[in-house]
Structure formats: structure tokens, C-alpha cells
Image (cartoon, rainbow, N blue to C red; front, side, top):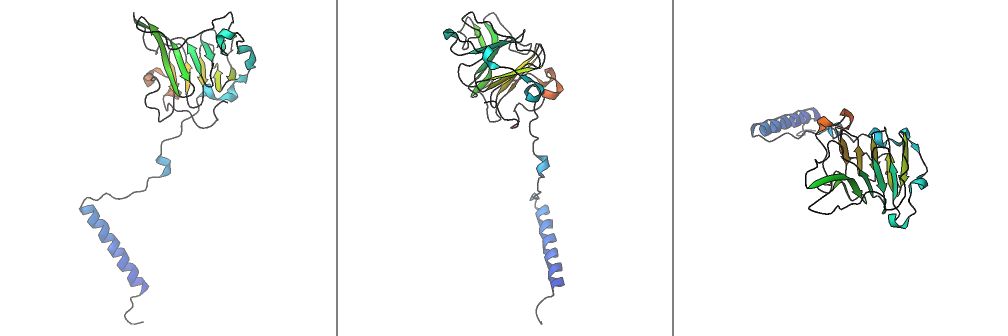
Length: 225
């Protein structure tokens, strides 16, 4: 039909306009819009071996629970080096002791251990000294003797799972929070949106290479119940 440009001519015209537009944008400093591949997103946190439950044999939790009224429903265990307690409320756990990377003791303050409170706060160092009373009490007030949780075993009580990867290591997790103690270092895990309700991790040079990444736990496996 007369007066109607051919499809080929129209296509050439469109490409010419597009090229001119890009040239003008580059000349005036307008940044190009480049799609970012999904592969460039931050990698998902990996699962630390300490919380890979398939590596550990579950044990009966009943023997770790103290029936003494003064212990208020707490459960206790020892690894030989570390003593940990679970409860009395859901997803409360604390481990007594001071890894080499814990805050240094002074004449006024001493590190007692670290605590996770209800999956809302922590892991946080529990400290005591002349300036204040400890905010957390470790240990039984009765004659209950904490049973031994052996290397390669795990126990789950009140929304907390603890494992013993080696004789000198203990690891406990709640939902989004966890702690690992060894004589030489510690590692704390907490939610990505938690800016302040936890204590910090040591410099990565003190940690094994496999734990120098994220301080968040992966979504799988699901948190203990």
C-alpha cells in the first residue's frame, strides 16, 4: 500500500532510534540498567558439622532432667570439660566455661559462660564480679549430678539440641541461635536482623576455615522442637 513503510524499513528505523538513545545516555552519564544474575546473590549459610544431626546418636533426654524442685525443671549435662544446662523455659540454654576467645577476666569481672534466652537474646556472655551480680546462674542447687554426654551423641530437650563433636567441644542450638565452645575458640550464631542482642564472634583468624563464613544458621534442617 502507498504511504505505508515496509516492515524491513520500520525495523531498521527502530534499531537506529535505539542505538541513538543508548549513545545519548552514555554521553550524559546515565548509568546503563544491567540485570544482576540471581547467582550473584549472597550464598546461603552452610550447615556446620556441629549441627548436622545425622552425625550424632540421639540419647534419652529423661536422665538429664533434674526432678529436684530447687532446679525448677532444668536439665544438665557435662562433656567432661564443659557443663551445660537447658531450661527452665523453652529454648533456654547456657554452657559454663571460658574459651580462649571469651572476654578476658579482670580483677573486677569474670566470664562464667554463655547463654541463649528463649531464642530471643544471645548467645551472650554471662559475667560476674564486684560491680554486679551474675544475670544467669550455672549449675544445680541440689545433689543432682549432671550425666555425661559423650562424643558423637546429641540430646534434645525443650526446643534445644546439644551435640558433642569431640571430647573438648560442645555445641547447642535453639531456633536461629547457637553456640560452639572449644578450648581455643567460640562461635556464636544469631538472626541476620539481630543487630545488638548477642555477643560478638572472635576474629576469623581464630576460627577453623569452615566456620569463617556466615553467623546465621541455614533454614534446613529445621530447628529443634
